[in-house]
Length: 232
Image (cartoon, rainbow, N blue to C red; front, side, top):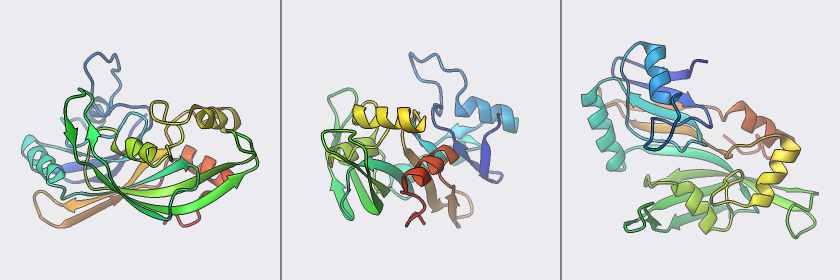
């Protein structure tokens, strides 16, 4: 199974990462089928990751094709010179707009970093199912634009708002996750990276790369009436 290439030039490549796949091998993890290895085999050359997406997140992922470009792109990410856009299905009716400024503690437990995300609600729905303690279940499709790139930032920020992302087994709502597994046969995090924009590290031209949400997400969002209202 090949990865879908969204953009490729002599300096970098952007692909559509599937949900469930790691970007690269992690200490203590036995996964061998990771994006870096699969893409290296697919392109026949080394590739260098410059940012990450969580295992459960699908969508636009950029990798460099040489170490110098990787260093330049990594610096652009650290300097907050890269614009990113995500879509997520969350529990409840999220606010129409929100500016989330909530620091995040690193997994080591000792380091805290500032983290900022902007949210815009695209659609709000109500289903006639008693998933929790209420007679019906409410959900929102939201657009997320992170201004920092902390570990699990979007998942933590949505949980902070009490609108956790559906499918998040660590920070989410187990009853909501179980409902979607049983009624829609989907067992993944409902979060996808749909766009990224930055200055090309060599030419300086503005590069904008987009991808539609994965088909499994689109099918579920259409089935419950959350998509495509306001999605673009």
